[in-house]
Amino acid sequence: MSEPAGTAAAIVAAAQRIRQHGDSAPQLARDPVNTPMINNWTEALGDADPRYPELAPPAMVQVWTMRGLHGRRPADDPLGAMTAVLDEAGYTSVVATDCDQSYARYLRPGERLSVRSRLTDVVGPKRTALGEGWFVTTVSTWSVGSGDDAEPVAEMMFRILKFRPPEPASPASPTGLSAPSEPAAAPEPAAPTPAEPARAVLRPVVNRDTEYFWAGMATGELRVWRCGECGLLRHPPGPMCPRCGAARPEHLVASGRGEVYSYVVHHHPPVPGRELPFVVALVALEEGVRVLGELRDTDPAGVRVGLPVEIVFDRVDDELTLPAWRPR
Image (cartoon, rainbow, N blue to C red; front, side, top):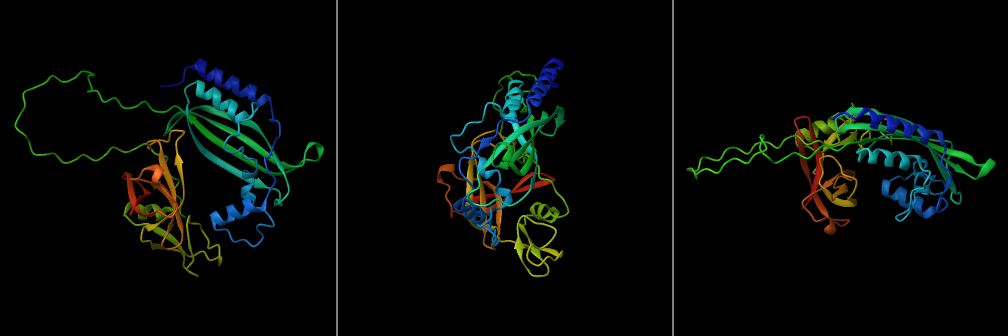
């Protein structure tokens, strides 16, 4: 169903008002850049750069200004304001679509950041594979210092799609009426179980660096990128070896066994093709790399770091099979 013209006009007008407000007030980080958090980050990602923790990884910039478990979004936050407008209009589902960060310099322990944000664009309504929605773009700038002495050190363009969730399929018959009861008939041979219909899931972007992985998924193989020069294994894949610089990618077929290295239990928001709550697990494979996927066949309360798991090939349709996990 297309968006009524009046509602679309109201969304555009609200977006214009929010844009006119410009930057939000600077939000001061709860804590300064600190060594323990840098160590936690680099350990989790396996980043052995010798410059850390005397410097902070640039990609951590957003970490320093996160509001914490009980933090509240500021009243003048443009993304929050635009999200509320679209929620009210029925666009209650969300997925991130783009994120582009740039860094002016490394941060050092002891520096304290602030962040301000502005709304730059709202485009819609657009028909997408997930449904009709609006693309919302904000730009956030991180600075060290305050007032005239504030030094911008990083910027992030962040875009989301706020979309209207699809209507649940009705279990009723095509006519909407119940079929009349009939006398019991002699049993017939069981018909083959029909294939499950394709699910509306978030689909990965496949490129020449990752197509070997998805081709392996389709054939029941968990393929891991391997450097054809020095033999380094890595995941996710890339065009060049980060250790020797060679551009000779190969792959090996992993055993599909490993242990839960880290996990989250996702309660909200709804995700296409998933039933809430569900567990997303980062699994350390026997081969030494880590692969992300949904953890199935277990109570979320019983998941733990170190849980032995094995791969499940989750066939979505003829074109997509996703990696998932189950306890072993």
